[in-house]
Image (cartoon, helix red, strand yellow):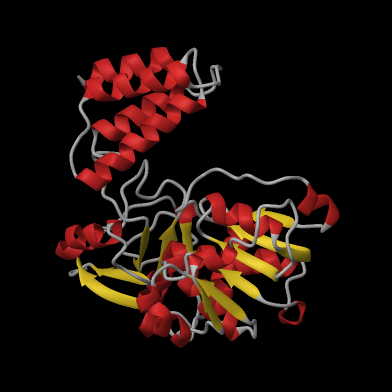
Length: 350
């Protein structure tokens, strides 16, 4: 069935485009929600239905269709045989690369780690030296994982926006999806640098948590719905968007003159509905934050800042630690939006 579904999806992708691909993304999400494999026949039927009603027709997504079908059929894993865990820190056991030696404390995130290569949920990891960052002075290996990809992404976003003129004197900074790991760390970093941070969340029970980590103001999600005109009142000097979709669209309409938006998430959707007016009349800059393939020079600089001026002051409030065998129930809680902040997985042994 998996082979048949894969072949069918390839045939469909040869003549149809993105609308059908969205169907496969939805099916992968459905698997995560329902905790079951989608039958191959259902995949093919769903693709066929979306293709029949979809407007786009091109050949760009053959590979994407093949991969997406395979993802669903192999329980949503990027590599069904690989260890998962996109972040890891620890001590070098041995190295054939002169840049590292036994005993060095290091960090490994990004690239193909836990995707097309074994990841961090293991006692040992063998990785290309080009992926490895020396642990900066000022961080422990625990701190590095309390930050992880989420912290690196938040730090990179701050770094990029500062290089584009963001400064505390410019006005308020808004962070949406505020209780997530990346957003929580961004709030802590920004507050530590002197910014007036507004946190946007739909979790009313977490207001005290957000205040504790540095939010000066907390708003509900609807607060971003200031109107649907191409340009609404300019409220924010900068924005850190982990949600995408309607919230990102709303932010583009409500930024101040020369406002800055860092985009690094799509929890609320992948669509962006806006106009050119915020860009050509207000000088808005929408900056994508790709933590996966950041050049090593910038990567190391951001990690150095995460150990110094960007180091969150409230990590103990943001992070909790679990054992490896607690991952399944932790994943379930994440899918139910019952978690906040960061979770560090302690791998016992050495």
